Length: 158
Image (cartoon, rainbow, N blue to C red):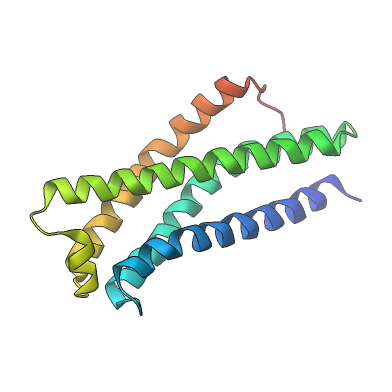
């Protein structure tokens, strides 16, 4: 099978799995805020998934390149390993950034974010979302450089 097509299929499978796991892991947090979820909490949940996707997008460029290189060298297992490894690193950092942004919002505002989200306060939800997305956009590329150095994987040609 064409290596590029296999890379696309693997990317789709890993992306869907990553986002489903992200939704499942985050859902208890949002359900603790209010059940049923308020529209403000839903907005924050939606935006959080988007932020997780930003981090995954940047990590997937490297993971996809490593997969493609290894697949061409007939080492499918190593290619899948790098996809799993970098998906896990992306997920952990996305989760940590989400909690960091939650703490930042609680520090800079006088409101209790959880209580305000339960009251359907879109201002607090929007602020948290803006902080989270901003951190994701700024931090994702340096995280890739750090993670690449940590696992010591060479940059693969496409």
